[in-house]
Length: 158
Length: 380
Picture 1 (cartoon, one colour):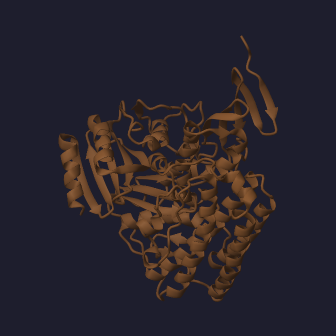
Picture 2 (cartoon, helix red, strand yellow):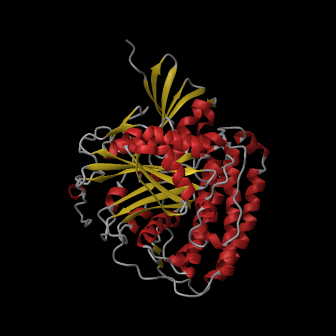
Picture 3 (cartoon, helix red, strand yellow):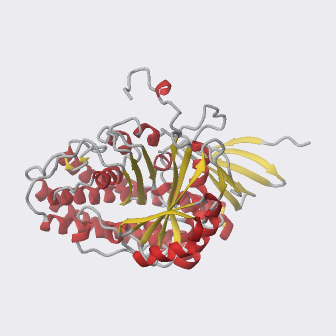
């Protein structure tokens, strides 16, 4: 589906493209190399009109030793959502911030920095958002963070 | 060296940070509803910065869901917003249905639509009550709206067994069919509520005093609304005709005919007005759903495990669009669920407003309430 848009994304991403698919009409999944993320994001916004950030987050894959990040961007003209992804190294995850392209991802990136431990270079406000300011017990959304010690003594079986 | 002054006022803690500049802590105990804090940088009259400090009720729902099966996850997800549980739950259940590749029966879709629209009315009523209260408006309006929620909560209790947190939607349909006598009572309630909306408009929306208080305040332009990722009635009040119910229909919305409420002003008044008009649209949707409701089963069997894959499901909650991104590795528990609620996005706009226009300290409560923010929603 969406063959013409897929072609245009392929040509603007060029060699940075890792994977692209569109399993349903209103979703386009694009995976690119991390070093090209800002460039691809800017061209997606300027040339194809993907302008409104609706979500961003990350998934931890300890077996592959990567963290997969995604930014979901809605296109107000075409009414489609692109899910822009990239993989960063799990040992020292670091990537350029996309706040310069889409200001609305600011809080989402802050959350990823806090809960997954991904460093965003050029982010204007990296400070604790959801966790306490003196939190030192690790990154909760990573898979090796175990929830069992936190379970209530009165027996929530998780 | 001057030591910072710390004083306690009825409005919160005040701290002097520079020459004539103060940090005013609004919160963290119930600045609106729930726990959260607005740190307002002011010289006593003008506001230079608003920082939203959320996380006081962070429960780690996304992490908890990784430890629960798909059906067990219903309970923590619902607790995100107590006023609007069914719309929130629809996002989670819809995402599971997408990744499981099942389709609920048509009758279940219509029942879901009716419950979600009743929930939207309940949610908007509460938002309007808080907005009127913050505008130093007659607190009676808050009591009216709170009282007018009751008939809807009673109806929801009749249908689902609980006034809120119903756990009524399950992957594959709804838990039960409509009880006898429910439709007649619902129709009568809608007829009564339609007249109540006229009262609100008369007392409030067309009222000169309320207009003077809110018009032209906190203007978000169309361009900014899109760039900052504003959601819901706030986005539509800025002139962006986006409504998930229309743009990406789920449940029975694709088969019903309704309009998207948009305004172009983008100020606090437009955001309040949009909510009143949306309640009228909700009444219209419920009536159509009652008339067109098909017969048949209300639940299909859910397969024990989904296929490995991912999906992004968008849903229009009372406060705006929420989306759920789900990654499944083929097991009976989700590998990762990312919930992006509406308030999380709306808070960013509140932070950005003082950077684009002059805001006075006296306007801050009205400004914030007009976005209908909800801390529990953003904290997860």
